[in-house]
Length: 446
Image (cartoon, rainbow, N blue to C red):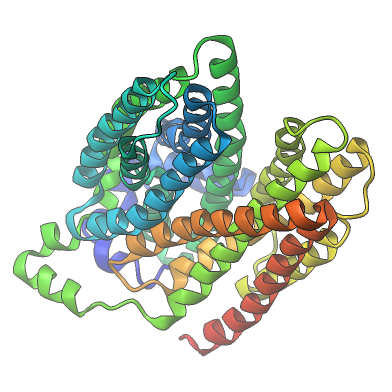
Protein backbone atom coordinates (compact mmCIF):
# COMPACT_ATOMS: atom_id res chain seq x y z
CA UNK A 1 0.00 0.00 0.00
CA UNK A 2 3.05 2.28 0.13
CA UNK A 3 4.74 1.89 -3.25
CA UNK A 4 5.67 5.55 -3.42
CA UNK A 5 7.09 5.86 0.08
CA UNK A 6 8.76 2.64 1.08
CA UNK A 7 11.41 2.50 -1.67
CA UNK A 8 13.02 5.62 -0.25
CA UNK A 9 14.28 3.55 2.65
CA UNK A 10 14.83 0.31 0.76
CA UNK A 11 15.91 1.15 -2.78
CA UNK A 12 19.33 -0.46 -2.32
CA UNK A 13 17.90 -3.81 -1.22
CA UNK A 14 15.24 -5.00 -3.67
CA UNK A 15 13.18 -8.03 -2.79
CA UNK A 16 14.95 -10.30 -5.26
CA UNK A 17 18.21 -9.55 -3.47
CA UNK A 18 16.66 -10.82 -0.29
CA UNK A 19 15.02 -13.94 -1.62
CA UNK A 20 17.26 -14.70 -4.54
CA UNK A 21 14.31 -14.74 -6.96
CA UNK A 22 13.38 -12.41 -9.79
CA UNK A 23 10.18 -10.46 -9.08
CA UNK A 24 9.19 -10.48 -12.77
CA UNK A 25 10.06 -14.06 -13.64
CA UNK A 26 7.55 -16.30 -15.46
CA UNK A 27 7.25 -18.42 -12.32
CA UNK A 28 6.25 -15.44 -10.20
CA UNK A 29 3.76 -14.27 -12.84
CA UNK A 30 2.20 -17.73 -12.93
CA UNK A 31 2.06 -17.83 -9.11
CA UNK A 32 0.38 -14.45 -8.99
CA UNK A 33 -2.26 -15.68 -11.39
CA UNK A 34 -2.87 -18.95 -9.58
CA UNK A 35 -3.19 -17.54 -6.09
CA UNK A 36 -2.44 -14.37 -4.20
CA UNK A 37 -0.82 -16.10 -1.21
CA UNK A 38 1.51 -18.18 -3.37
CA UNK A 39 3.46 -14.98 -4.01
CA UNK A 40 4.40 -14.49 -0.37
CA UNK A 41 7.05 -17.24 -0.07
CA UNK A 42 8.63 -15.92 -3.29
CA UNK A 43 8.87 -12.43 -1.84
CA UNK A 44 10.21 -13.31 1.61
CA UNK A 45 11.49 -16.87 1.42
CA UNK A 46 9.83 -20.06 2.61
CA UNK A 47 11.04 -19.88 6.21
CA UNK A 48 9.85 -16.34 6.90
CA UNK A 49 6.14 -17.15 7.26
CA UNK A 50 6.38 -19.98 9.85
CA UNK A 51 9.17 -18.15 11.67
CA UNK A 52 7.14 -14.96 11.95
CA UNK A 53 4.11 -16.94 13.11
CA UNK A 54 5.74 -18.77 16.00
CA UNK A 55 8.08 -15.94 17.02
CA UNK A 56 5.04 -13.83 18.00
CA UNK A 57 3.47 -16.62 20.10
CA UNK A 58 5.27 -15.61 23.36
CA UNK A 59 3.54 -12.22 23.25
CA UNK A 60 0.17 -13.98 23.04
CA UNK A 61 1.09 -16.10 26.08
CA UNK A 62 2.50 -13.33 28.26
CA UNK A 63 -0.59 -11.61 29.71
CA UNK A 64 -2.57 -14.80 30.32
CA UNK A 65 0.52 -16.60 31.65
CA UNK A 66 1.17 -13.75 34.10
CA UNK A 67 -2.45 -13.72 35.24
CA UNK A 68 -2.43 -17.48 35.76
CA UNK A 69 0.89 -17.63 37.61
CA UNK A 70 0.36 -14.68 39.96
CA UNK A 71 -3.22 -15.70 40.76
CA UNK A 72 -2.07 -19.25 41.47
CA UNK A 73 0.79 -18.38 43.82
CA UNK A 74 -0.93 -15.48 45.59
CA UNK A 75 -4.47 -16.82 45.74
CA UNK A 76 -5.71 -13.37 44.74
CA UNK A 77 -7.56 -12.55 41.52
CA UNK A 78 -6.84 -8.88 42.17
CA UNK A 79 -3.10 -9.53 42.33
CA UNK A 80 -3.20 -11.57 39.13
CA UNK A 81 -5.22 -8.90 37.36
CA UNK A 82 -2.84 -6.16 38.51
CA UNK A 83 0.18 -8.08 37.23
CA UNK A 84 -1.50 -8.79 33.88
CA UNK A 85 -2.47 -5.13 33.65
CA UNK A 86 1.16 -4.15 34.23
CA UNK A 87 2.14 -6.35 31.28
CA UNK A 88 -0.40 -4.54 29.10
CA UNK A 89 0.73 -1.09 30.22
CA UNK A 90 4.36 -2.00 29.63
CA UNK A 91 3.58 -3.29 26.14
CA UNK A 92 1.55 -0.21 25.21
CA UNK A 93 4.39 2.07 26.33
CA UNK A 94 7.34 0.04 25.10
CA UNK A 95 6.15 -1.02 21.65
CA UNK A 96 6.35 2.42 19.98
CA UNK A 97 9.78 2.95 21.53
CA UNK A 98 11.02 -0.32 20.05
CA UNK A 99 9.44 0.57 16.72
CA UNK A 100 11.15 3.97 16.66
CA UNK A 101 14.49 2.40 17.52
CA UNK A 102 13.99 -0.14 14.71
CA UNK A 103 13.35 2.70 12.26
CA UNK A 104 16.55 4.42 13.35
CA UNK A 105 18.93 1.53 13.99
CA UNK A 106 17.45 -1.27 11.91
CA UNK A 107 15.29 -4.17 13.01
CA UNK A 108 18.02 -6.73 13.67
CA UNK A 109 19.84 -5.10 16.64
CA UNK A 110 16.59 -3.95 18.24
CA UNK A 111 15.00 -7.39 18.01
CA UNK A 112 18.13 -9.12 19.34
CA UNK A 113 18.35 -6.75 22.31
CA UNK A 114 14.65 -6.97 23.12
CA UNK A 115 14.77 -10.78 22.93
CA UNK A 116 17.50 -10.90 25.58
CA UNK A 117 15.91 -8.28 27.83
CA UNK A 118 12.47 -9.84 27.58
CA UNK A 119 13.70 -13.34 28.39
CA UNK A 120 15.47 -11.99 31.48
CA UNK A 121 12.38 -9.99 32.53
CA UNK A 122 10.03 -12.97 32.11
CA UNK A 123 12.31 -15.25 34.13
CA UNK A 124 12.57 -12.54 36.79
CA UNK A 125 8.78 -12.42 36.88
CA UNK A 126 8.61 -16.18 37.40
CA UNK A 127 11.17 -16.04 40.22
CA UNK A 128 9.56 -13.02 41.92
CA UNK A 129 6.10 -14.59 41.77
CA UNK A 130 7.25 -17.97 43.07
CA UNK A 131 9.14 -16.25 45.89
CA UNK A 132 5.81 -14.98 47.23
CA UNK A 133 4.08 -18.36 47.16
CA UNK A 134 2.28 -19.01 50.43
CA UNK A 135 3.41 -15.75 52.00
CA UNK A 136 0.27 -13.78 51.26
CA UNK A 137 2.40 -10.81 50.15
CA UNK A 138 2.44 -9.18 46.75
CA UNK A 139 5.78 -7.36 46.51
CA UNK A 140 6.39 -4.49 44.07
CA UNK A 141 9.03 -6.66 42.41
CA UNK A 142 6.29 -8.69 40.75
CA UNK A 143 4.67 -5.62 39.25
CA UNK A 144 8.05 -4.23 38.18
CA UNK A 145 8.99 -7.48 36.46
CA UNK A 146 5.58 -7.68 34.76
CA UNK A 147 5.93 -4.09 33.52
CA UNK A 148 9.42 -4.80 32.20
CA UNK A 149 8.27 -8.01 30.50
CA UNK A 150 5.56 -6.11 28.64
CA UNK A 151 7.78 -3.17 27.71
CA UNK A 152 10.57 -5.34 26.26
CA UNK A 153 8.39 -7.84 24.39
CA UNK A 154 9.73 -8.10 20.80
CA UNK A 155 7.27 -6.59 18.32
CA UNK A 156 7.45 -9.36 15.75
CA UNK A 157 4.02 -8.80 14.19
CA UNK A 158 4.31 -5.05 13.53
CA UNK A 159 7.89 -5.31 12.29
CA UNK A 160 6.94 -8.21 10.01
CA UNK A 161 4.33 -5.92 8.44
CA UNK A 162 7.03 -3.32 7.84
CA UNK A 163 9.12 -5.92 6.02
CA UNK A 164 6.15 -6.94 3.85
CA UNK A 165 5.54 -3.30 2.92
CA UNK A 166 9.13 -2.94 1.76
CA UNK A 167 9.25 -6.28 -0.04
CA UNK A 168 5.99 -5.84 -1.93
CA UNK A 169 6.84 -2.29 -3.01
CA UNK A 170 10.22 -3.33 -4.39
CA UNK A 171 9.12 -6.57 -6.06
CA UNK A 172 6.31 -5.14 -8.23
CA UNK A 173 6.94 -5.07 -11.96
CA UNK A 174 7.62 -1.54 -13.28
CA UNK A 175 4.74 -1.73 -15.75
CA UNK A 176 2.19 -2.37 -13.02
CA UNK A 177 4.00 -1.35 -9.83
CA UNK A 178 1.10 0.29 -7.94
CA UNK A 179 -1.40 -2.45 -8.76
CA UNK A 180 1.05 -5.31 -8.25
CA UNK A 181 2.38 -3.96 -4.96
CA UNK A 182 -1.15 -3.33 -3.70
CA UNK A 183 -2.29 -6.87 -4.50
CA UNK A 184 0.75 -8.43 -2.87
CA UNK A 185 0.48 -6.20 0.20
CA UNK A 186 -3.21 -7.01 0.62
CA UNK A 187 -2.28 -10.70 0.67
CA UNK A 188 0.57 -10.11 3.12
CA UNK A 189 -1.48 -8.00 5.52
CA UNK A 190 -4.37 -10.46 5.30
CA UNK A 191 -2.00 -13.23 6.31
CA UNK A 192 -0.51 -11.13 9.14
CA UNK A 193 -3.94 -10.39 10.65
CA UNK A 194 -4.82 -14.07 10.45
CA UNK A 195 -1.52 -14.96 12.13
CA UNK A 196 -2.32 -12.52 14.94
CA UNK A 197 -5.77 -14.05 15.42
CA UNK A 198 -4.40 -17.60 15.42
CA UNK A 199 -1.66 -16.87 17.95
CA UNK A 200 -3.97 -14.95 20.27
CA UNK A 201 -6.32 -17.94 20.28
CA UNK A 202 -3.55 -20.53 20.53
CA UNK A 203 -1.46 -18.66 23.14
CA UNK A 204 -4.04 -18.52 25.97
CA UNK A 205 -5.13 -22.09 25.20
CA UNK A 206 -1.51 -23.27 25.51
CA UNK A 207 -1.18 -21.41 28.82
CA UNK A 208 -4.28 -23.12 30.19
CA UNK A 209 -3.15 -26.59 29.14
CA UNK A 210 0.40 -26.30 30.48
CA UNK A 211 -0.58 -24.55 33.71
CA UNK A 212 -3.30 -27.07 34.56
CA UNK A 213 -1.42 -30.21 33.56
CA UNK A 214 2.13 -29.36 34.68
CA UNK A 215 2.77 -26.15 36.66
CA UNK A 216 1.62 -22.50 36.59
CA UNK A 217 5.16 -21.25 35.92
CA UNK A 218 5.74 -23.44 32.84
CA UNK A 219 3.90 -21.27 30.26
CA UNK A 220 6.06 -18.24 31.06
CA UNK A 221 9.24 -20.32 31.10
CA UNK A 222 8.31 -21.72 27.68
CA UNK A 223 7.57 -18.20 26.43
CA UNK A 224 11.02 -17.06 27.52
CA UNK A 225 12.63 -20.07 25.82
CA UNK A 226 10.76 -19.38 22.57
CA UNK A 227 11.67 -15.69 22.69
CA UNK A 228 15.41 -16.30 23.11
CA UNK A 229 15.46 -18.81 20.23
CA UNK A 230 12.83 -17.79 17.68
CA UNK A 231 13.08 -14.00 17.87
CA UNK A 232 16.84 -13.93 17.07
CA UNK A 233 16.14 -16.23 14.12
CA UNK A 234 13.48 -13.78 12.93
CA UNK A 235 15.86 -10.88 13.50
CA UNK A 236 18.60 -12.52 11.42
CA UNK A 237 16.32 -13.55 8.55
CA UNK A 238 17.53 -11.99 5.27
CA UNK A 239 14.33 -9.96 4.94
CA UNK A 240 15.65 -7.54 7.56
CA UNK A 241 17.89 -6.08 4.84
CA UNK A 242 14.77 -4.67 3.16
CA UNK A 243 14.31 -2.09 5.93
CA UNK A 244 17.70 -0.73 7.03
CA UNK A 245 17.70 1.81 9.82
CA UNK A 246 18.00 5.46 8.81
CA UNK A 247 21.03 6.13 11.02
CA UNK A 248 22.85 2.98 9.96
CA UNK A 249 22.28 3.54 6.24
CA UNK A 250 22.74 7.30 6.06
CA UNK A 251 25.27 8.31 8.71
CA UNK A 252 24.99 11.96 9.73
CA UNK A 253 22.85 12.69 6.70
CA UNK A 254 20.44 9.96 7.72
CA UNK A 255 20.39 11.29 11.29
CA UNK A 256 19.53 14.77 10.07
CA UNK A 257 16.82 13.43 7.80
CA UNK A 258 15.39 11.38 10.65
CA UNK A 259 15.24 14.44 12.88
CA UNK A 260 13.26 16.28 10.21
CA UNK A 261 10.70 13.49 9.73
CA UNK A 262 7.74 14.15 11.99
CA UNK A 263 4.66 11.99 12.33
CA UNK A 264 1.72 13.78 10.69
CA UNK A 265 -1.55 14.20 12.55
CA UNK A 266 -3.19 11.83 10.07
CA UNK A 267 -1.41 8.92 11.78
CA UNK A 268 -3.71 9.52 14.75
CA UNK A 269 -6.70 8.25 12.74
CA UNK A 270 -5.58 4.61 12.44
CA UNK A 271 -4.06 4.66 15.94
CA UNK A 272 -7.32 5.84 17.53
CA UNK A 273 -9.16 3.30 15.39
CA UNK A 274 -6.99 0.54 16.86
CA UNK A 275 -7.83 1.82 20.35
CA UNK A 276 -11.49 1.41 19.40
CA UNK A 277 -10.73 -2.07 18.07
CA UNK A 278 -9.05 -3.02 21.33
CA UNK A 279 -11.99 -1.57 23.27
CA UNK A 280 -14.26 -3.78 21.20
CA UNK A 281 -12.15 -6.83 22.07
CA UNK A 282 -11.74 -6.10 25.78
CA UNK A 283 -15.38 -5.22 26.43
CA UNK A 284 -16.58 -8.26 24.50
CA UNK A 285 -14.37 -10.50 26.64
CA UNK A 286 -15.65 -8.93 29.86
CA UNK A 287 -19.28 -9.15 28.78
CA UNK A 288 -18.88 -12.77 27.68
CA UNK A 289 -17.43 -13.63 31.08
CA UNK A 290 -20.52 -12.23 32.76
CA UNK A 291 -22.81 -13.93 30.23
CA UNK A 292 -21.22 -17.37 30.58
CA UNK A 293 -21.00 -17.13 34.39
CA UNK A 294 -24.76 -17.37 34.64
CA UNK A 295 -24.96 -20.40 32.36
CA UNK A 296 -21.94 -22.69 32.54
CA UNK A 297 -19.09 -20.86 34.33
CA UNK A 298 -16.71 -18.09 33.38
CA UNK A 299 -14.19 -20.49 31.80
CA UNK A 300 -16.56 -20.94 28.85
CA UNK A 301 -16.05 -17.28 27.89
CA UNK A 302 -12.66 -18.05 26.34
CA UNK A 303 -14.14 -20.70 24.08
CA UNK A 304 -16.95 -18.39 23.00
CA UNK A 305 -14.48 -15.62 22.24
CA UNK A 306 -12.37 -18.06 20.20
CA UNK A 307 -15.36 -18.60 17.89
CA UNK A 308 -15.25 -14.95 16.88
CA UNK A 309 -11.48 -15.18 16.46
CA UNK A 310 -11.77 -18.08 14.04
CA UNK A 311 -14.28 -16.39 11.74
CA UNK A 312 -12.27 -13.16 11.95
CA UNK A 313 -9.10 -14.98 10.88
CA UNK A 314 -10.85 -16.63 7.94
CA UNK A 315 -12.37 -13.33 6.81
CA UNK A 316 -8.99 -11.58 7.08
CA UNK A 317 -7.51 -14.08 4.62
CA UNK A 318 -10.31 -13.37 2.16
CA UNK A 319 -9.35 -9.69 1.88
CA UNK A 320 -6.60 -10.63 -0.55
CA UNK A 321 -9.30 -11.54 -3.07
CA UNK A 322 -11.58 -8.52 -2.56
CA UNK A 323 -11.87 -6.08 -5.50
CA UNK A 324 -9.65 -3.05 -5.07
CA UNK A 325 -11.80 -0.55 -6.95
CA UNK A 326 -13.81 0.36 -3.83
CA UNK A 327 -10.71 1.61 -1.98
CA UNK A 328 -9.49 1.36 1.59
CA UNK A 329 -11.78 4.01 3.06
CA UNK A 330 -15.01 2.48 1.75
CA UNK A 331 -13.92 -0.96 2.92
CA UNK A 332 -13.22 0.47 6.38
CA UNK A 333 -16.58 2.25 6.63
CA UNK A 334 -18.66 -0.67 5.36
CA UNK A 335 -17.00 -3.20 7.66
CA UNK A 336 -17.30 -0.82 10.62
CA UNK A 337 -21.01 -0.31 9.98
CA UNK A 338 -21.49 -4.07 9.64
CA UNK A 339 -19.61 -4.62 12.93
CA UNK A 340 -21.84 -2.13 14.73
CA UNK A 341 -25.01 -3.63 13.25
CA UNK A 342 -24.05 -7.18 14.19
CA UNK A 343 -22.82 -6.16 17.67
CA UNK A 344 -26.37 -4.98 18.42
CA UNK A 345 -27.31 -8.68 18.43
CA UNK A 346 -24.95 -9.52 21.33
CA UNK A 347 -27.49 -8.91 24.15
CA UNK A 348 -30.10 -11.09 22.40
CA UNK A 349 -28.88 -14.72 22.91
CA UNK A 350 -29.96 -16.61 26.01
CA UNK A 351 -28.01 -19.83 25.40
CA UNK A 352 -24.45 -20.81 24.55
CA UNK A 353 -25.23 -22.12 21.03
CA UNK A 354 -27.10 -18.95 20.04
CA UNK A 355 -24.31 -16.76 21.42
CA UNK A 356 -21.73 -18.81 19.50
CA UNK A 357 -23.74 -18.28 16.32
CA UNK A 358 -23.86 -14.50 16.85
CA UNK A 359 -20.11 -14.36 17.55
CA UNK A 360 -19.34 -16.46 14.48
CA UNK A 361 -21.13 -13.95 12.25
CA UNK A 362 -19.81 -10.95 14.17
CA UNK A 363 -16.22 -12.00 13.51
CA UNK A 364 -16.64 -11.72 9.73
CA UNK A 365 -16.10 -7.93 9.47
CA UNK A 366 -13.53 -7.80 12.29
CA UNK A 367 -10.59 -9.30 10.40
CA UNK A 368 -11.08 -7.15 7.27
CA UNK A 369 -11.27 -3.98 9.40
CA UNK A 370 -7.93 -4.79 11.03
CA UNK A 371 -6.29 -5.53 7.67
CA UNK A 372 -7.62 -2.24 6.30
CA UNK A 373 -6.50 -0.11 9.26
CA UNK A 374 -2.96 -1.51 9.09
CA UNK A 375 -2.94 -0.76 5.35
CA UNK A 376 -4.10 2.81 5.97
CA UNK A 377 -1.44 3.19 8.67
CA UNK A 378 1.22 2.20 6.14
CA UNK A 379 -0.19 4.65 3.61
CA UNK A 380 -0.11 7.69 5.91
CA UNK A 381 3.22 6.81 7.59
CA UNK A 382 6.19 8.98 6.56
CA UNK A 383 9.14 7.31 4.88
CA UNK A 384 11.45 5.82 7.48
CA UNK A 385 8.81 5.75 10.25
CA UNK A 386 6.85 2.62 9.33
CA UNK A 387 8.13 0.72 12.37
CA UNK A 388 7.00 3.50 14.69
CA UNK A 389 3.53 3.61 13.15
CA UNK A 390 3.01 -0.17 13.02
CA UNK A 391 4.02 -0.62 16.66
CA UNK A 392 1.83 2.35 17.63
CA UNK A 393 -1.12 0.59 16.00
CA UNK A 394 -0.36 -2.58 17.96
CA UNK A 395 -0.10 -0.52 21.16
CA UNK A 396 -3.48 1.00 20.39
CA UNK A 397 -5.03 -2.45 20.47
CA UNK A 398 -3.38 -3.22 23.81
CA UNK A 399 -4.46 0.08 25.38
CA UNK A 400 -7.99 -0.27 24.00
CA UNK A 401 -8.29 -3.81 25.33
CA UNK A 402 -7.45 -2.55 28.81
CA UNK A 403 -10.03 0.24 28.48
CA UNK A 404 -12.69 -2.11 27.18
CA UNK A 405 -12.04 -4.72 29.86
CA UNK A 406 -12.29 -2.08 32.60
CA UNK A 407 -15.44 -0.36 31.32
CA UNK A 408 -17.12 -3.60 30.27
CA UNK A 409 -16.27 -5.26 33.58
CA UNK A 410 -17.73 -2.40 35.59
CA UNK A 411 -20.95 -2.39 33.58
CA UNK A 412 -21.22 -6.18 33.85
CA UNK A 413 -20.73 -6.00 37.62
CA UNK A 414 -23.33 -3.26 38.12
CA UNK A 415 -25.91 -3.94 35.42
CA UNK A 416 -25.21 -7.36 33.92
CA UNK A 417 -23.88 -8.62 30.59
CA UNK A 418 -26.56 -6.88 28.50
CA UNK A 419 -25.26 -3.47 29.59
CA UNK A 420 -21.64 -4.52 29.03
CA UNK A 421 -22.46 -5.54 25.45
CA UNK A 422 -23.29 -1.91 24.68
CA UNK A 423 -19.58 -1.06 24.83
CA UNK A 424 -18.58 -3.12 21.75
CA UNK A 425 -21.53 -1.59 19.89
CA UNK A 426 -20.22 1.91 20.63
CA UNK A 427 -16.65 0.93 19.76
CA UNK A 428 -17.72 -0.48 16.39
CA UNK A 429 -19.77 2.64 15.65
CA UNK A 430 -16.74 4.81 16.47
CA UNK A 431 -14.69 2.68 14.05
CA UNK A 432 -17.17 3.42 11.26
CA UNK A 433 -17.01 7.17 11.98
CA UNK A 434 -13.21 7.12 11.96
CA UNK A 435 -13.40 5.34 8.60
CA UNK A 436 -15.36 8.28 7.26
CA UNK A 437 -12.59 10.58 8.49
CA UNK A 438 -10.02 8.36 6.80
CA UNK A 439 -11.95 8.69 3.54
CA UNK A 440 -11.47 12.46 3.64
CA UNK A 441 -7.76 12.14 4.49
CA UNK A 442 -7.01 9.58 1.78
CA UNK A 443 -8.92 11.57 -0.84
CA UNK A 444 -6.72 14.62 -0.20
CA UNK A 445 -3.47 12.65 -0.45
CA UNK A 446 -1.70 12.51 -3.85
